[in-house]
Length: 82
Image (tube, rainbow, N blue to C red):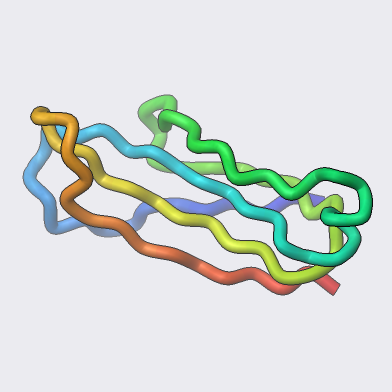
């Protein structure tokens, strides 16, 4: 199974970059050494698809980076996979 995270509205003026961070914090991911946390550049779709491979609480953060390479907005969504 997978989850789709998508930016639906954004009040930041155009010409920004989107970055995504996914963090697995559940016990299952920890036991298997799969606690991720890397940051990925968006491919232009303003979407991120992630698997639901591990149970537990995870979160996805979305960062809006301006032309000066400064994060000017961000948000976090928690997801609990059972």
